[in-house]
Amino acid sequence: MQSKYTIREILPDEFDRFGQSLLGAYSQLEGFPGREEHPDYYHLLTNIRGFTEDRDSQVLVAVSSTKNLLGGVVCIGDMADYGAGGSATLAEARRDWFRWLCGEEMLKNYTAANGTVRTFCNNCGSSLMFFSPGEDADLVEIALGCFDDDVPIKPDAHIFLGSGAKWAVPEDDLPRYEAGRDSARIR
Image 1 (tube, rainbow, N blue to C red):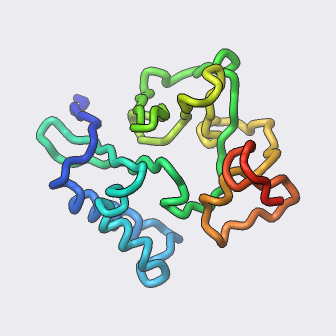
Image 2: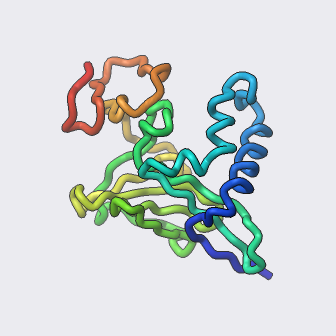
């Protein structure tokens, strides 16, 4: 029997519990830096409420029918707020050239406050694709990690480097952009 759950925005009284679950999960990942190596990151995890207060970010949680917090995801609107390495594993495709071969019934869409629509796997929570309201409506960004086979696509640029961690410097000769391809070119 499959249990029922609901995906919704986190409630104020759930932040501490969610932060502790993030802390527990990350601290147990094999090979992931520990609290001693990255104290600021672990502080961010335990204080996730503060992270989302003044940013274009939201926390979505899965809650059981008995109100148990099952898990969640932090939707980050601007990666500059997060300090991610900046290496994107996305490819742009025309909507009419792309189709799901299986599992489409497991997809769940979430629309952020800025209108960006993110598609997640309803089973595992993986981020699979997104599209933005201000962009070409015929295009969609697809996470390349969701493909089973090698994808015959090679990167042609590094984008949003201004939002990445300062230590994440590409080691190739591809063009580099501060934000999107229409922004200032870094190199």
